[in-house]
Amino acid sequence: MIKIFNSISIYKILLFSLLVRLSLFPFFSDTFLENEWGVIFHNFKISGILGYNVAINDYLAVPKLADAGQKVLPSVFMPPLYIFLIFVFEFFFSNFVKLTNFVIIFQIFLSLASIYMFYEILKIFEIEKKLVLILCSIFAFFPLNIYAALQISSVTLQIFLIVTFFLFLFRYEKNNNLLNLFLFSLASGLLILTRGEFFIFYILTVFYFFGYLKFRLKTIVISLIISTLIISPYLKRNYNNFDTLVLTKSFGYNLLKGNNPSFKVEGDSNFIEKNYDRENLSIEADNFYEIKLDNFYKTEAIRIIKNEPFEYFKFFFIKVFSFLLFDFNSTYPNYYNFFHLFPKILISLTCLFGAILALKKKGFYQYLALYYFSNIFLFSFFFILPRYSLILLPVQLILSLVFFNFLRKFFN
Image 1 (spheres, rainbow, N blue to C red):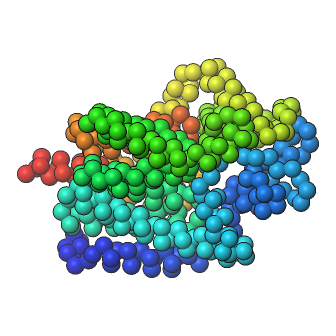
Image 2 (tube, helix red, strand yellow):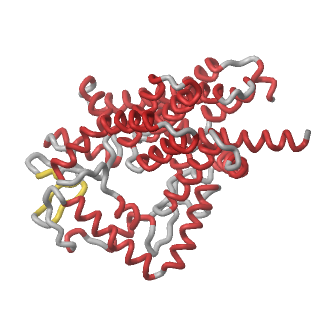
Image 3 (tube, one colour):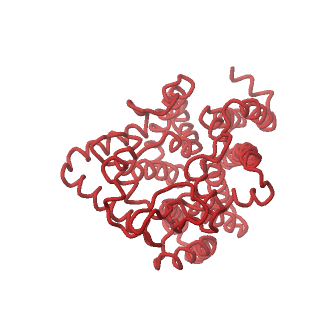
C-alpha cells in the first residue's frame, strides 16, 4: 500500500481532492446561507446594520430575519471575518443561490490551498517524502474535511488560516525573514477575526517562540502591532456601538450552553431557550442588548456550576475525553459513521501518545503539543463540536508522526 506513494506527487493529491469535492458538491453542499450567517447577511441587506437580533418591543429582541422597517440591533455575537467574505462575494454575485454556490466553490479551492500549505509545513520538519505524501493524503481525504468545504461554515476558512499561521511561523523561526513575520502576524489577526478566542493562542505562541525559546522584544512588538492593526477597525466599530473594547461577546452564552443540567458534551442551546424566555428577562432592547444578555447568561452559568461544582468538574473531564477521543452520546448526524469515527479515533490515539512524547522536545514539537492540549482544555470549559477536532487535524497528524517515529526507534 505504501509503495503507491512512490509514484504520486502533491499535485496528483490536489487534483484528486478537487475531483472528489466537486463530485460530492451536488449531494452534500448547502443550497442557501445557513444559520447565523444567513440571518446576519439578510439583516445587513435590510438595515445596513451588522446585526443578529431584531427588536420586537422595548424589552424583547430575538435572532430572526428582519422585516423592512424593523429595528436591527448591532451584533457582537459572531466573529466577523466569514460574513465579511460573504459580503465581498455578494458584491459580485447578487443572486442568493449563485452566491451560496460561489462561496462553496471558493471553499473547495481554499481547502486545496490548505492541503498544499500543510505539505509545505511538513517539508520544514524534514520528513521523508513518502511520509509527507501519506500525511497530506490523510489530511486531504479525511471525511469531515471534505464535508466541511461543502457547508456554509467558517471552519474551512479557519483551517486555511491555521495552516498559514503555522507555515509562516515555522518559516520565520528558520530564517528570520520579515516577510514571514508579516504573513504570520497577518494570519494571526485574521484568525482572531474568525474565532475570537484565538487571541489567547496567538499570545501564547508569540511568547513561546519569541520569548521563551529566544527572547526577541523587537519581534514581539512588530507582530503585536501588525495583528492589532488587522483587528482594530472591528474593535473601533464595536467601541462605537457598545462603549467597550470587545471583539466578540458570547462567553456567557457558550458557558451556559456547555454547562447546564442536560449534560451534553456538544452543549444544549435548547436548555437556554426553554428555561430563559427572553420576554421575561426585562433586558432593554437597545444597542447594548447582546452585551447585557450575555452577562446574564454568564451569571446563570456560574450559579449553576457553583450549585454542583463536583458534577461539573466531572463533566469537564468527560468533555476532555470526548475531545481527545470521541463523544459517547453525540446527536450529530453521521457522527458514528465508520468512515468518520474510525480515522478520528486512530488519529486521536496516536496523536495523544505523540503529544505526551513531544512535551519533552523543546521547539516545534513541544509547541504543537502545548497548542494541542491548551485547545482541548480551553474548549472543554464550554462544549465540544465535531468540527473542533477538524481544526486541530494538521497538529494531530504531525504529533502522530512523533509517536510513529518513537515506535520505529523502539523496535529497531
